Image (tube, rainbow, N blue to C red; front, top):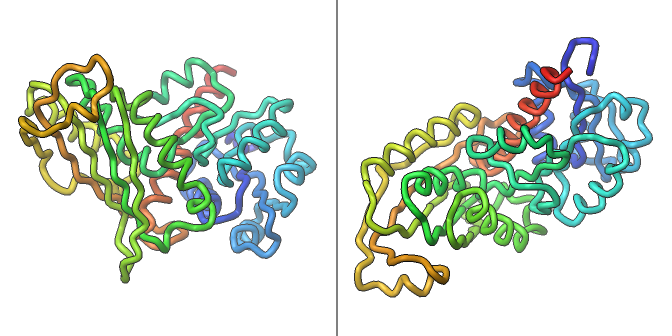
Length: 316
C-alpha cells in the first residue's frame, strides 16, 4: 500500500498490452498505483514510456522485478507476456505471496470474466486469476447471458481482429487462444460444448474488433434471452465503453439441419440458433481505436485488480 492509500501494482511485459494497461492504471484508476514495469527488451517503447512517466523499470524480466527495491511493497502483479512465459513467471513469484492477474491464455489460475464470476473468485481469495483471452472477454458474457435463461448445449464464437493489432505475443498464443477461449465458454459461459475461432483480418484501413456468438438452444423465451443479452452488454460497457451490440439478437430455426453432430452426449434436441453480433472499439489509450481486442483485455484486467485491491483494503 502506498502513502496515497492506493494498492501498488507491477506489470510484467512491456509490449502493446502491458503498455496500454500501464496507461490505464495511471489515467483511470483511483485505487491502483504503478510501482514497476518489467520487460526483457531494453529498447522497447513500453519501458521507455514507463521511464518517462516516472515508473521504475527493469529489462531483466521477472528476475529483475523481484530484485527491485519496490518489489516488497507490490501487492498485485499483471502478467502481459505469453502463455509459456506466464507458467515460468507464476512459479518464480509463488514464494512471495503476490496476487497475479494473468492476461495470457496460460490458464494457470481460474478463468475470470468480470461481469460473470469475479465476485465468486474474490470470495475464494484466489492468488492467480486468468483473463481468458480478448475474444473470451468479449463473448463469454453473452454466452452466459443466454445460459442463465435456458440451457446452451453448444456455443461457438468467432473473434475477428485487425491484423495490425496482433503483436508477437498474440500470434505466439493463437493455439492457446482457441483452447482457452473454448474452455472458458464452457466453464464460465455455461455452454455444454464450446468452440472458438480467431480471424486476423488484414484489411486496410484496419477494422475494429468484431465478434459473433452462436448458441444452439431448445425451445425458450426469445424476449427473455434478448433482454438478458442487452443487460449483459450494458454491464460490460461499464468498463469497456466501446463495447456494443451491432443489431438485435437473431433467432433462427435449425429444424432439418444436422446440428446434433455439434452437441455433447446427453444433450436434448436443439431447435433454435441464437446469433449475437458485437463490436469493440478501443479507447485508444496507447494504440489506435481499432485495437479493441487489446482494450477489452486490459480493461477487464484493470477492473479485476481494482476489485481485488478494494476487497483487500476492506479486509484490513
